[in-house]
Image (tube, rainbow, N blue to C red; front, side, top):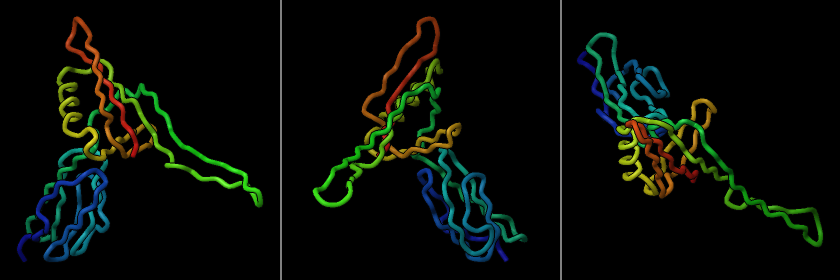
Amino acid sequence: MPSPIVTPNSAILRGKQTQVFTANQSVNWSVTRGTLSAASGASTTYTAPNRTGTYVLTATNGVDPPTYVTITVTGVFPYPPSWEYEGEADKNVLIWTPQVGPWQGNIKRGSKRKVDLVANLRPREEYEEVFQFWDEHYGREDLILPHPDLDLELTGRIDAKLKDKWHLGGNLVSWSTVFQEV
């Protein structure tokens, strides 16, 4: 039996996006990062991690050379801030008393969080990458902001501001931007 043929043979996904991969025979599936719905069989559903990068999906039948599929994950804000930030949650609750019956209420727009991301004393190269990323993405598409320490994951957009602060006598930069949950 020849090496498995996997369809599609590559993928570009956003963080947390899913993709079904199908082989022309029953195979064992493995991946360097992300999760799979099945470890074996003719197909599996891959869920991308909330981290940008290039990962490898492997399909093997146990006899022939394995087939490798390259998966590129985008759409995650890839620059970890210093986590010295201020955040706020916005939830508008309306309550009224009708003439007859109990109190009634309505939650308007749900809860939206806003996080001011700050990165202190970073290399100039990182700032240039952040600025380019911000320029390409702000306001145009939803991004994922993972916070591993708080087990928090926000989906939102970068605000239309990117502030920088230069430090004299070195090649270090502090930057900040606002991430608004959608």
